[in-house]
Amino acid sequence: MTTTTVVHLLRHGEVYNPDKVLYGRLPDFHLSERGQQMAEMAAEWFEGHDIAALYSSPLDRTQETAVPLQKMLDLPVTLDDRLIEASNKLQGMSLSRSSVRDPRVVSRMYNPFLPSWGEPYKEILARMVSAIKVARRAAWGREAVCVSHQLPIWMSRRAAEGRRLWHRPDLRECNLASVTSLTFVDERLASVSYAEPAASLYVEGPSVPGA
Figure 1 (cartoon, rainbow, N blue to C red):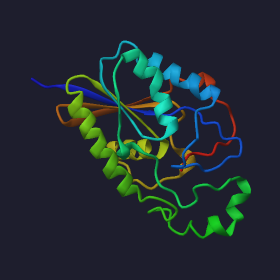
Figure 2: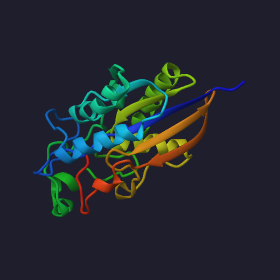
Figure 3: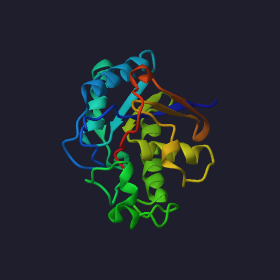
């Protein structure tokens, strides 16, 4: 007899960031009002799911995204540093389209395959795989939710789908409050799916990710 377990990777909601700062791992970047609505919609999406474990990156925006889900499920939220945002050498800068001409930015862009401007893709994937395995064990035969960030989730998905890790950041399919679901049969990854519970709240235009 086989056992099916699902690990859902939930990205945080919109962050209040009027200065377009690349906030990365900086503290005190909280969900905007719309981001809080996104978190509520994500929690509603999970209604009826058999969630046995709930994990979150320790950053403010992910913990706040987990709150509606924690209240609905009446489960403790376990903070896991392995789910944290990718580190980034440009963290704290206010970025715009003209930033591509900024020497401080250009000097970091010499290797898009590593990448040279932040935490290596392979290292991000390694810690995410470790966190996913822990969540899978904790929810064996049921489902787990891990609240994380765009790049770590995207690395997990690309690896799960057998794709190379380096990529164009503007083509990531990991929108705000989206859910990337990994379904395992015993310990074998059987399928990957993607959903956007808060799609109705998305606004057009460029955004500045955490890293």
